[in-house]
Length: 266
Image (cartoon, rainbow, N blue to C red; front, top):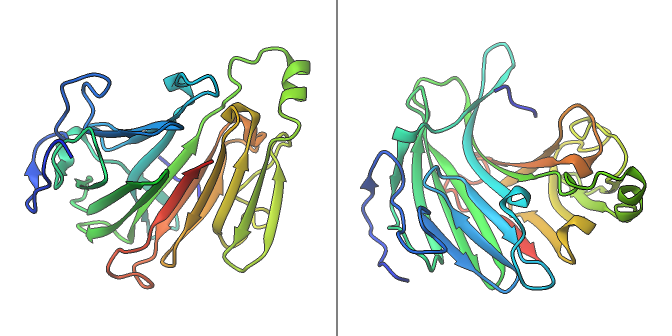
């Protein structure tokens, strides 16, 4: 649903700070954590947001403009049925895992307005990024839930020739599996309201994303039991202009917060 709006050893105790701690050497200067493979660079900012930056076929990294963002937050369902996003302010973070430029497993926490808090868990291994988390305290909110948004930007923002763009993206597609077991396919060049029941249905458990803008890569996104995705975009435009997969944790199915969304670059 669209919302309104090992360099260091791990510690078992939180490191309290206004923002997450930071690294002081390039290419991670100012970042909380990072790791790199031959296909991408994955970095976590002091704001708690993570970025997946793909590597081109020639070996150099894409620009930050094309970064796929991982945004942890709380969504609160108000009594009148609206969903309100609650992001963490600069003063609301605490690190459980110290800053590291060789990230394997990370845990950090955030507190939003209304004193609701959540925990984020990230694992990076063999080219697979696993992300999860859970609500820790409901605070003064009505019906909060932990969400991790995977946001794919407009990868064609600099393609100004309509004819060339049409040819370039003609094979862009997304294949996905709904929570009810139904398989679907979307051509990403067609305008669509991705949130409608006809498209996303009750939610998604898997998605395979193939786009020319990924420069030879493919993204496989999935969730384990205890989580599901919502697919949405803005203003019912073509998905090549950007879209979001919002992973929601279901505490009734996964009270211990072991569920994970996974993103694999192939």
